[in-house]
Image 1 (cartoon, helix red, strand yellow):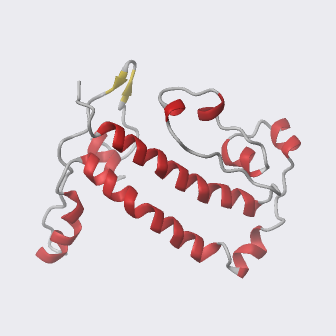
Image 2 (image 1 turned 180 degrees about the horizontal axis):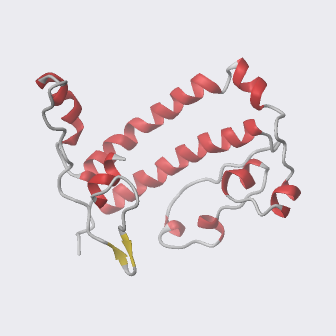
Length: 172
């Protein structure tokens, strides 16, 4: 939300995308947290540590840390006995049923259907990006969860490639 707000000026419902492009280029600076009575100077320094550069710097810093966050989520859930009891074999949807119900995204891929519009009918720059399509095997809730976990990793790969592309690209 911090990145979105820094770029668009709003936390939700921003009119950033416009015909022909976007409302504006990425800002040169990342907004800093300001002094409030509940935070010490040391807390503010720590909170603003990765906000010293541009928004692109902030995005890059976050994307480097994000893989570790996803690993943490997996550590908490993937082998958790209670989580697996509530998701493995639950809500199984066959590939045929998923297509018949016009499922999309992780619901469709979690059922074992290899379909991602960004790969099958690329638009924008997706044909120039390297990422995998996560697909489930059994179509249950656990598979859909695993697809979502891998989608987070793949999305982060896309973000890192876009940051690398934007670095040398001058603003218009």
